[in-house]
Image 1 (cartoon, protein in one colour):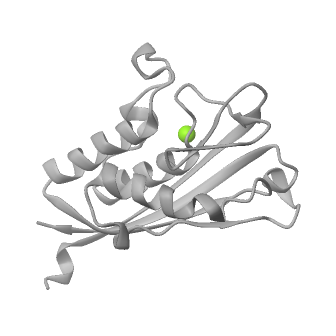
Image 2: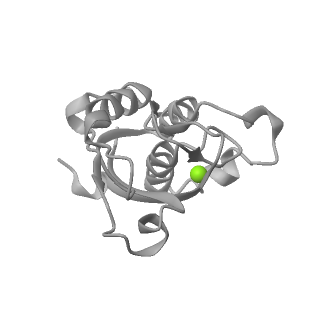
Image 3: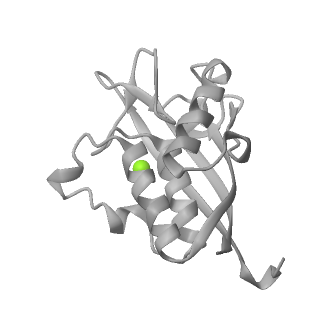
Length: 162
Ligand code: MG
């Protein structure tokens, strides 16, 4: 393998909790008393993964690609945005080798939904589910996640020039 053809990407996102919103993480509608606020469906995990991919191709970020001032993206399914980003990665001549991610949330408990999130993200990116990691952690009641003011997610990816 030509190691000079490898790229890494990193993504991070944060969304605040709000009443009367759905909690969508990795495309899974998770039962909770509040959801995340955002112009799109506020899927903080899908956004972090999208930004990791864009980082890998030095392609800016999803804020630039899908501006929150654009009415086309109001309530958007973030898996569709991820799908578009994965297409862009391929158009730029890269393949997505591997993705890993972490969600920081004090509540709700996310482990029951992890495999479905992995499947949704893998499908959106067109890669095997084995190549997509999703982990969740609390922050031990510290910081904004710990105070349940919001949820953050980080993701990394490995790309190779095809
Ligand atoms: Mg976001």
